[in-house]
Image (cartoon, rainbow over all chains, first blue to last red; front, side, top):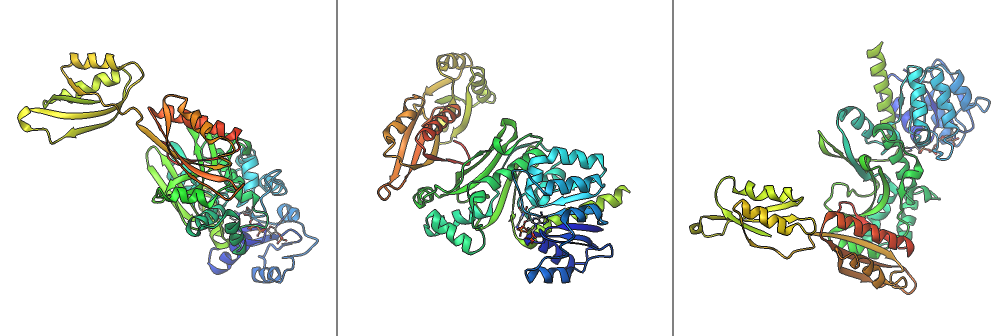
Length: 328
Length: 162
Ligand SMILES: NC(=O)c1ccc[n+]([C@@H]2O[C@H](COP(=O)([O-])OP(=O)(O)OC[C@H]3O[C@@H](n4cnc5c(N)ncnc54)[C@H](OP(=O)(O)O)[C@@H]3O)[C@@H](O)[C@H]2O)c1
C-alpha cells in the first residue's frame, strides 16, 4: 500500500518510525511538512527524511508544496496529520477534498476537518468509492470509533461519557494528589510537555468539546457543531473544591458527556466517586459507552503520544487495505 | 410507607398493582424477616414515590385488595444530591442562594460545608440537596444553575444524578 503523508511532527514521525520498525508493507511515496515536500514513486528514504527533520531542517524540497504532494504523488491513501484548525479546518480540508476527488482514501488524526465538514467529506468519499477514516482524532490510541461503528453495530447508545483531554486530567490528578493550585499544576504540566504554551484549547474544554462533536456526528447520528456543546473548563477549580470532593471519597474530573436522546452535549468538571471506572490517573483517557445490547463498556488508554496516536492511524490504514482487498 | 400482608402467593402483587395504578413509582421492596412466624404474616416495606394527593386513593385500592397498611412512613425527601460551588459565595449572598432551593418546597438544602479562602479569593462550598422526586431534584439543580450564572459562580455537579 502506498501512502502520502502530510505532517511530520509528533504523529507523523510516530507513523514513519512504525513503518520503519515493522514489516507493514506500507510505502511512502509523498511526504510534506509546512515548508517542503518530496514525491518519489519508488518510495521515499524515510530514515534520511527523519534525520533531516531531527536536525531542524525541512523534510524535503522547498519547491514541492503539500498541495503538490496531494495532487501529483502516486498513492492509495492520503494520511493527513497536520495541526488542527477549528475555525476553517484549512489547509487540511482542501487537501482532503483534493485527494478524495482523485479517488484516494483519506486517514487523518486532524480533528478540524472531521468536526467541521464530516458530512461533506463522507459524501465525497462515497461518491468516489473510497474510505475516510479518523480513529486518531478521538482519544489517541483507544479504538473508540472502530468499537462503536463495528463492534457495537446494532446497539443503540443511550449515553457516552468520559475523560477526553489528557492535559486537564493530568492537572486535576495533581491538584487532588498534592493539593496544588490550578496554576501550579498547569506549570508542572507545561514543564513535562503535557500542556502547550497557550493551554486555552485544552483547559477551557474546547479540545474535549471538538471530540464530542466528532463522535456525535460520525457515530451517534447527531448533527452538532461546536456551539452546541455546553462547555465549562477547569481554570476556576480550587484545591479546596477538590478537598471537599475528597472528603466524600470523590474527586473532580473534566467529563465530556453525550446523551443522544436528549440532545445533550456537555463538557464540564464533575464530581465523581474515586472508585468510578472513569477516574484514571495522569494523562490517560477513559470513555464509558452505555449500549442497549452490550451494556456498559469502559475503554481506558493513552489519548495522545507519538507512537500511540500512530497506532490508531496505522489501524485505519490496515483496515482500509483489508476491506479494499476483500472488496476487489 | 410500610405494608403488612398475609404470607400468601399473590399478595405482594395485589399490593404492588394499585401503586402503579395511581401513578406511583416503587423504589424498593424490603422483606422484614424478623416478624414472629406465629402471626403468619409477611411484613413487607415498600418505599415508593407518589404523585401529590394520591395517597388516599392508593389506601382505598389497597383495602379493596385486602392489604392492610400498618404505618405510613414520614420520609418525604428521598433523593439526595451533592454539588460543589466555587466563587464569591459570601459576597453574592449565600443564604439567598440556599433560599432559592428551599423556596421550591419540594427540595431543600440539608447540608453545607464552606471553606473560607484568603481575603478576596473565591471560596468553595459543598452543598447537599434533598428532594421528594427525581424530577424535583432536576428542577432544583436547574434553579441553582440559573442562580450560579447570575452570580458568576461555578457549579460542579455529580456525574451520576440523584
Ligand atoms: N500529538 C498527539 O498525541 C495527537 C493525538 C491525537 C491527535 N493529534 C492531532 O494530530 C495532528 C498532528 O499532531 P502533532 O502533534 O503531530 O502536531 P505537530 O507536532 O505540531 O506536527 C505538525 C506537523 O504538520 C506540519 N504542517 C503544519 N502545517 C502544514 C501544512 N500546511 N502542510 C503540511 N504540513 C504542515 C508541521 O510542519 P513543520 O514540521 O514544518 O512545522 C509538522 O510537521 C493534529 O491535528 C493534532 O490535533 C495529535
